Length: 342
Image 1 (cartoon, rainbow, N blue to C red):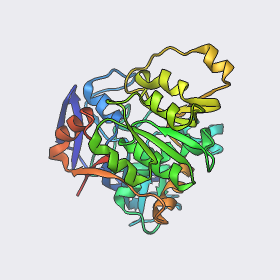
Image 2: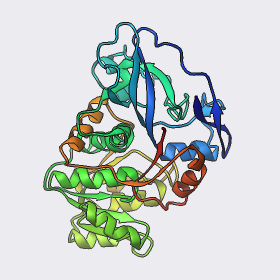
Image 3: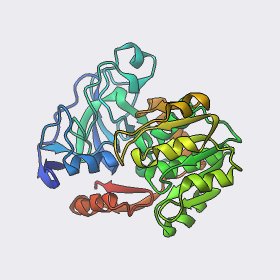
């Protein structure tokens, strides 16, 4: 079968590998249907160093598949069922795992496509407990976007930031995969959504998703526009995943008692924090990583009900993956790039 492997920095190859053996107890064999590309794939492609990473490495951290065979003791999924795949190899035994706080696993082995072989291969064996069945009405693309694109946002907005109807939120990088999800999820509960984009051609696309105000951060300082839009009161929540370049401005546009929730640092991992602003304004800075499997299930239920939908930039096959990663690296994308495996 085919697998897409990172051989060395910026070098991907399609490699023929043996098909997986029959699934062991508690495992299933999946035929992978769709893989969603993320910045985590770009980081690995660039050659950023990570502990435990060894090459060659199968890429792909977010995917869906169809159950082809089940091992002894598996009762949660059936052959032929479409499932979404949780992207981290958790232990399933520690207290956070037992309490369904999956992304706080105390013995996680790593993230697939990052530390461990990922899902950009035709078949893979996985523990059945890491699979979330897709409800009727959700296709392979939607199921592939549940673990990171929608699950991460569900966890950020509702588990961590506790976003409430009627609040005002600033969503950075509204054209990114998680940005498009955040706009939709916030708008569907009745929030006023302000978002930033990097080009004028993305403005109308962001408005079509429900954004009330769209700021081109290349031509306007978002801090000034947000302060003007909110009559200097600021926003209730900032959805942050850019990092160093936007951090100071993100804190500045928060209202007193506002919450900043972050899951990324694409522009840099270190920044300064104005501590006086932090305590005088009683701000809350919240780190968020990954999601719980319940977030994935909730996201797919919303897709099935038509409340939100995947935003797809392009679909590619194995042979076009380099071009797809270059497109992501150049920030030309609006929504998600999907690797379809047929």
